[in-house]
Image (cartoon, rainbow, N blue to C red):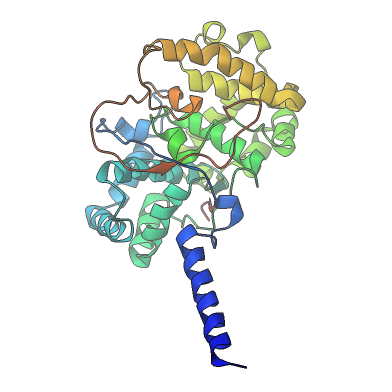
Length: 341
């Protein structure tokens, strides 16, 4: 066989390899997503990671910040600058906040899937410093927050719904929460979680959904877990008439949507997307109107406007981020897994 046949074959293989690298075809199909530019602005970082005032978990957050010492923080920042030179400082800061929020959730829940490639990128780089990461976890919560490959919302919709609800109960939304994690409240709670809420007692809920060891050993964690269980049961027993900012007495759109997510999961799962879409259309125009309908908004989805203040198009440097991998056809509202030993 002529030599040029071999040369052509080699050239074809090399070309295919380079094309695949360029377009990241090696990335699992479930993790491909449409790219959307997100502008990160100079906003004051939320106090205590944006922990809600009604949640008493400040000491654990202080412990996390202490455990993530200056030496480890500097090493991670330098590595991110080397591995992700396109990532601007402001983008890094906001994504680091979300990673810290993830660790807080891991200190309370039995299992926490990772639904953000952007946050996962930072976590991967932390893991490169094996001793520093082990020391951080030991000082923070006494056990390792284990890492597994990220999965998408479509693969585990029920787990994503549970993540959304707990995230919303613990933290106030930032203008970048939806840009980093993807749209919230797209999926109903799984049938197993629904059954636990309806029929399970306190111990069953703790053992199946929460970090049982932390509840036994840490009074602050026990208090927050008990609060979350109370809130979960309250959401399940609301009437449909109470699912509005006016009826609920809450001006926080995210909390209203989270309550509705539990209610419609339990009572109208078959038409969940339809009900959530209608509710979102009812309350979000009011939220956006508060900031002026004619303004140029940076909200990439309605969930972005669950924050206290939507992003606008004025000033400051930015970076790029990603939108979610999927969305519900009837509503625009809408995983490495981590957990302690």
